Image (cartoon, rainbow, N blue to C red; front, side, top):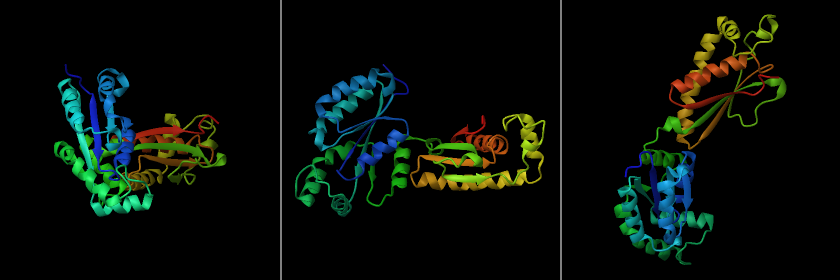
Length: 285
């Protein structure tokens, strides 16, 4: 029986190679993540993946702490595929030198024992067969977090633009800046509709206010330049591994100019393929 849309990624590999970071990336991409599952529970876990609605996108972390999972993993993956679940094994590797350095920096104990170098070599031998059956091997020796995210996204088939959550927020300076703002744009240089009696009680969501803001000769070139700057910067934030970005647009009271500009910018970003949402913090004040 086919189960369209159900996807299972099994993340394993050498201790210290980045499995925990990879699982966090899967979590940011909307996957239910389970780490260090005991081998004896693989069957029960498979039942959840097959039946529970919120387990449609699942990432499972397995390592030697959960027991000898080599034979069980291959059989488990085969069963899940037979039952219609898209199942892939992702193996994280790294050089011996990189692993020694990471364990030394974090002062974590290797799961296989006190002698770090011997433990790393023993684990590499232990997992050789698993590495051979992996759908994708990622060598994290020289990867920064953003580069690891790029590799995981490629393995998943995710669109990098869609994975970043962008919030465009309008606000009023008289009420203070949003605390979570990453980029802030002040649009108080634009004429204020508040001083037009017919527009005072309206907001930037009203077509009359939008028309008033856009008729100013500086608005169009400003918007073009501002949007170009944002479109230039966002890919670099994604490359560095940032999952959330907040762009704050402020005017005096947060009801007119900033509201219209926020709506316009969020709309353009959505057209660009980004997951962009708009919020108007002070529009009702």
